[in-house]
Amino acid sequence: MSATVIAGPVAEAAPLRRFGIGDYLTCLRGIMWREALRFVHQRERFVSALVRPLVWLFIFAAGFRQILGVSIIPPYDTYVLYEVYVTPGLIAMIQLFNGMQSSLSMVYDREMGNMRMLLVSPFPRWFLLISKLLASTAVSVLQAYAYMFVAYLWGVVAPGWGYVAVLPALILCGFMLGALGMLLSSAIKQLENFAGVMNFVIFPMFFASAALYPLWLVQQSSPLIYRICTLNPFTYAVELIRFALYSEVNWLALAVVAGCTVVFTSAAVIAYDPARGLMVRRGGGPA
Amino acid sequence: MAASARTAGVPALSVAGVSHSYGARKALDDVTFDVPQGRFTALLGLNGAGKTTLFSLITRLYDTRHGRISVLGHPIDREPGQALRLLGVVFQARTLDLDISVRENLLYHAALHGLRGREARARMQEALEDVELADRAKDAARRLSGGQMRRVEIARALMHRPRIMVLDEATVGLDIASRSAIVGHVRRLVRDRGVAVLWATHLLDEVEDDDRLVVLHQGRVLADGETGAVIAQQGAADIRGAFNALTAGRAREAGEAA
Image (cartoon, rainbow over all chains, first blue to last red; front, side, top):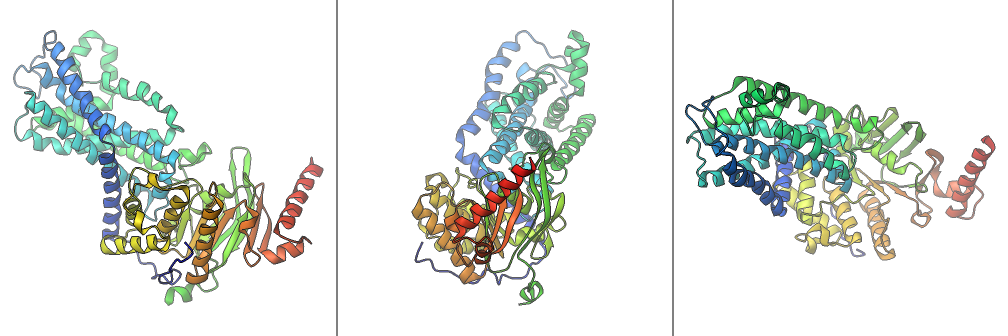
């Protein structure tokens, strides 16, 4: 470095101007681009995200179709195969895992120090976190469509417009589950603690929901578990996707998912706030 | 330039009465000092002195609850966006994303500062040429040596043209050649570009006689002034003697208090 040529004077930099919408979009694009790059560089992440629900579809659902009859319940206007019933639950499962994967990635970034570079950006902290959530949501939507494509080839076909109508539902559900993951990441101190998230968040959320069985069936078996299912936001994510695939809106599900999105996102932004966050209270740091 | 006229005489970085605790343990106790514009200021302290906590406060990773920190007159708590735009940061821990290329790391940083397109690419090229790593732009960050990673981090911190650079133990873990190359490069930034630098270190040989010096020990500032004056004040022959005298005095006081 002895022959370093120094270019123009840095100290005489241009006076600061306010960031405009273009600058915010540049920042958002940069965060989404980095998430996409990481996704491309980690191909095994994509494959495992796809394989998990496909195993459920090919093996679990194939077995269950012989023993579990699904009666006519909205949005279905006829009897459907179990594979058809379980598909919205598996799409939501992809998004749940992606949300938790993002959480894991944030904890990893914090341990590796990358998170600091995000947090010392001059853009508002809430904007940076929401940009990160949007990036994670975009990845989860891509994964969901990849799964739906394979399911289509397997014979699990939704009505044509359903593939378009489901997009807003996927965005909202992906955002909600990403925000939940972000909130959890603020409370996880070390990467090793992440196994707890699997045991205490992902599995209970997935199994105690309408993903695998219709709620009326759960109610017949156990009123208590039925109550738990109705309190689980994941149930509503599944139902929102299920109805959207048939170009219908489940208003209760939409309200719950939207409400939870606002609550989880606000809580995550507060948790990462340097003045009020969980990090400060427990004496650690966000990076 | 208007911005320069407005900020003439304002310290590049001002730390005033800053304290910070982790539960009952006090990491910083009433820390006060300034980093003048266009000067190299060494923040000297042993491991555990509180340097990294101070950096976390300066960069607003933690909120400053007691005291005030300003960057060129912009309080970091009330105007974080303005303050962070003027600040270039190199943390002690490596902060490159190892999974992506050098180029992608720098362009990501550019985006986080609102820089885009041709301008971002031009600044990236210039920054990498400055640290003589333009030929490694397409390499994955994980393929660089420790010294090269540091140089990339310095290049990255300069991309948004900060007025002050803060570097926390930037040479830790590097061999002698890499250390001296990095220190030399940062000193040239001060000399040729007028960038103010706050250089945190525990290595006495990284402090030169014409630097400003702040000695931080057990969370308190023991000395703040020109290095030569601090040495003379302690009646020492060199920085090592002055540092030993300062920290031994502090240990004696602690012993007497106990």
